[in-house]
Image (cartoon, rainbow, N blue to C red; front, side, top):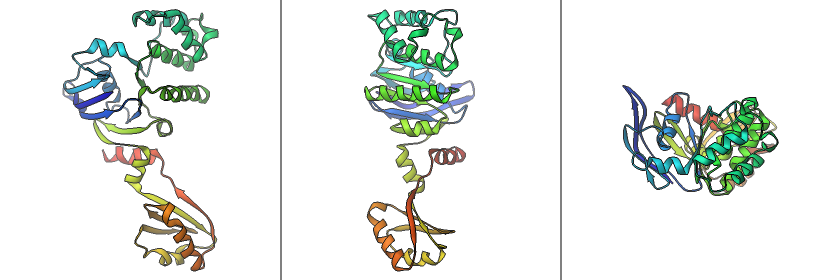
Length: 302
């Protein structure tokens, strides 16, 4: 659905996007992560044919950026970080204008559908300028979906929203995902990306890494199991450290932190060895590094 090869954008001498090569499949929710100024929004603007690339190629929904720009703009939906609405017009009128521009067959029906779906039907006749930030964001999402695009670009979809509004937007993204739409999300909310995205990319002018969040954890840290003991863990390091399937064993107070590739297979053997060595095991858990840990490490390296 989205494929880029050496996609590049310069503003004068400033290199904003450097040779981005990426492929995103149909029905995938893809997270594009990076700090402010990394080039994320510039990438979205190129992929939606709002600005032209300096070099490289991109294909979106079968259309080539720079050649089929009208078709790309007609068939994708986009939510910008600061959505511009006609503040003096009602929610109904705002959506009607854009549904007409998109040549939607049943304009009133589509407008009503998304106003109801996003909980704005009772406020349909109120001016958009009277809406809260969360309501404006929901109205902008409705605007992006009026023409039923198969590819949706969301730039910071929950930025500045209260927890209730943010949850509604996340639930709505989950619903769109279940419909098989391809969704490209730029976000600073790493917990949100962890929950919603099939794969994520860490980007800072150049593409640093692309993988599932599970794959990134495995790649960066491996899997680590923590054995909580009733006593200090130091004497029990020697009981297990010579096993060939272990990567690393570390004692931290009353915990043994053990890195290994296949805990489901080897945990029973480790528990048996520790018990035979006299350890009193209180409980066992897997240490799970956050996406934030991975992101900060990659960005700092960049």
